[in-house]
Amino acid sequence: MVHIVGLEDTLGSHPFAEGMDPDALRTIVGCCANAVYHPGDYIFREGEAADNFYLIRHGLVALEIHVPQGPPIVVETLEAGDIFGWSWLIPPYRWTSDARASEQVRLLKLDGACLRGKMESDRSLGYEIYKRFVPIMARRLASTRMRIVELATEPAVTPRHKG
Amino acid sequence: MDVIAANVVATTDPMVPMPFRITRVIREIPGVYTWHLKPLDGKPFHYRPGQFNMVYQFGVGEIPVSISGDSREPDTLVHTIRAVGPVTNAMQELHAGAVVGIRGPFGRPWPIDEVVGSDIVFVTSTIGLAPLRGLIYEVLHRRQDFGKVIICYGTRGVDDIMYEQDLHRWRARFDTNVHLTVHSAPSGYRGRVGSVNAAIRAARPDWSATTAFVCRSEALTRQAVDTLGELGVTKDRVWVTLERNMQCAIGLCGHCQIGTTFVCKDGPVYRYDQIEHLYSVREF
Image 1 (cartoon, one colour):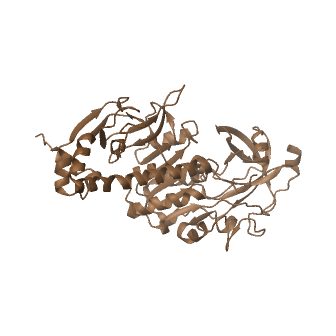
Image 2 (image 1 turned 180 degrees about the vertical axis):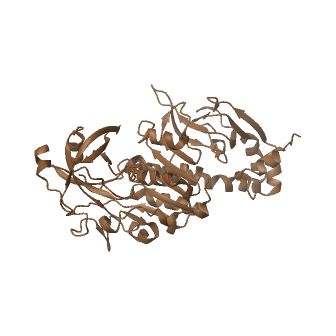
Image 3 (image 1 turned 135 degrees about the horizontal axis):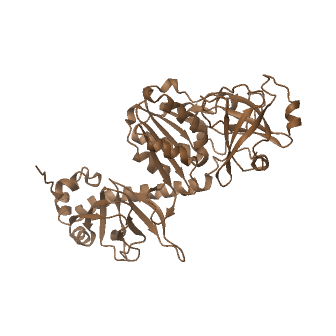
């Protein structure tokens, strides 16, 4: 027998919605849809209007940076349980990188433009959303800093004895 | 070179190098090479994973190098060396047939018997895989003694992956997981891109019953330990290695001393909680 799971359950089981106020969850579900991308598909491209954000249910998503006179490079991958796309929160609401499916990817796609309007009129909803995005942004920033340290100190296992 | 080697008297004096012949040279990645060596006296070289040797190029100099082979194959000694200074650069020019001096093995090995029954997570990056490789071999030899075995390995790019054949072999096993991550990759790359922490977070052992073996630069060991701690691995279940300027290798000269510990004889393997305080001492 096929068991049909509603969007509310699907969204509610994603780490993003953990502990979320039920009213806020219901509002967000109204801006939410399932999406599937095949390997190599672009989910969004740098410079395009950023009107969505995404919760990964399954698969690997590559964030790519366009390099002039060369092919783009992958700078990060995200996987099930991760969230990507916060440009919808920050003017001018344009993507700052490409996002591409590294394999078949199942996502929850949230309409950020719709949510922006709702957050303006319902500040507690806005607080719920920001409360979830700010720690992710902080973690990614910390991770990026540590990657700078990684690149500065490895490879080498930095031998003290330059023998 | 052979004349010099022939004049080296076989001895058990830890300060006297024993002659070993390079039988094979493998170029792993640019600037990193692996030697397979055999002792001229033909005797097996017994050691335990995690120990190191002092490797001497006659007339050039001596350096500490961890042993990165399979300790169950004592007829072949394996060292992986990164060319970073005058000695290691000179060594890079040696070919199969050359003879070098070896003193060792020295240092405290990885504590494999103490962690029987645990899930095992290896956390390493770039050439840090070399000191762990012998332990990985041993854990896989004794696979039934452990729960899940997960290798989290990071490199700068797809061209910097060490021991690629081993990684393929380990990944192909049904009882071992390999989580590889690179800092950046060409578009279309289908693996994970990010920090080694991303690889740790992708692992799914029973964190409360996990022992972690970490071999990273010291700046990043703490980061790895913090991530493991967030997931539930207490610091007394994390084992790390320290690298210092080891010269005598028997705790006499003091070059490798940090606080009260001599890395050459008390280490290079330490339980993290026992040396955690050293990581917070600036410029130490």
